[in-house]
Length: 187
Length: 238
Image (cartoon, rainbow over all chains, first blue to last red; front, side, top):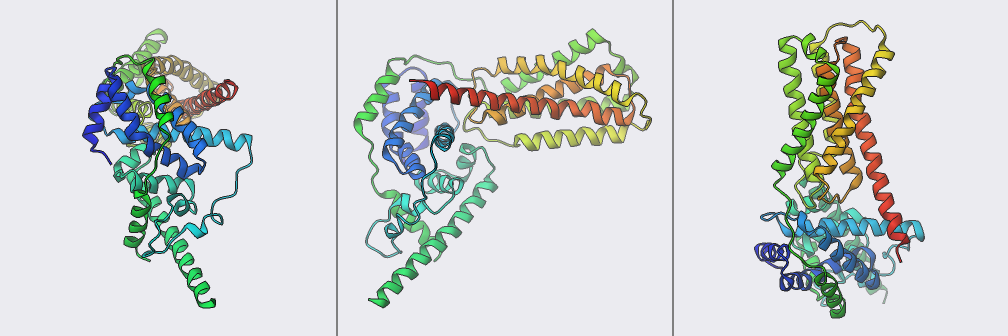
């Protein structure tokens, strides 16, 4: 996580044509953006393409960032636009793949387990809108207001999505916990 | 399982390192570097919103000046004092919403649909309270003429708005089209209030107010078409 003022400063320098600032932004934010796409699509190849496309779009519209405004919502709003575009394209050209529910069930670890849970697997049970909200809140470390800005919605709607996502995660994790317990009893 | 435990799991998962291929980052940096030059940031929201409000006012006044200020002459002082400030407020809100739609990551205070619904409702309430002539003479023929005139004036307002906001970037072109259409429709309604001397309640409520949703629908359709066109262009790109 990076202090927002630091990013704001880099963004201002990028708008003034500073290549070092542009490179710094690319190196700092690309892993976050990449993860945002991986959480949605699961394929790293796709995520690579989307990160590249996002940066090209960011470069085209960098004048739309206004000094003093939070940087991350601006980046994520554009990344989200690219993702939605890509989703449309994908849904028109190919049948959607099966959700990851089954594939990643084993990757979910109950609390206390020593294994680090896989984020993509954890969030796979959530619908797209809830997944992106949780990703922005918990992984990118954005505030409710920033997520609302990035998703063009209200803070109330973000809170509601986060609440529903937690409900789903609770059910999912409890179910995994139970099934692991049962397997343990049987063996 | 409690929220804290879920938080902990998510925190652990988020802390796992996520590396991106350094070659990809270099490729991105190089492609950006080749066309890097200073850019002029967009002006503040209030400047752009003020510009949009001015465009709407100019279109309404110019249209009424060309066709005649018969409407405002027919209105009582109370009607003038209520109708035009309400239209002014709605135009300002619409202008601010249009600017927000063109700047990614801006704080959205009103959704496009809410703005359209609230604006239409506000006009309906104002007209219902102020006008009490319930005759319906030549309801359709006069109404269609007013609707057409309102929409004709919405077109230059929309073009002017598009010109002013052309440097912006709409992450949701349909929503942006809807808001700009609503704003242009309000310019059309303002022109009708200045020009149309038919003060029959139903005429004003139905045909004058209808300019706004029809114009908004046209804007949303254009936004959808723009999105579709960019989608097709990108698909056909090598």
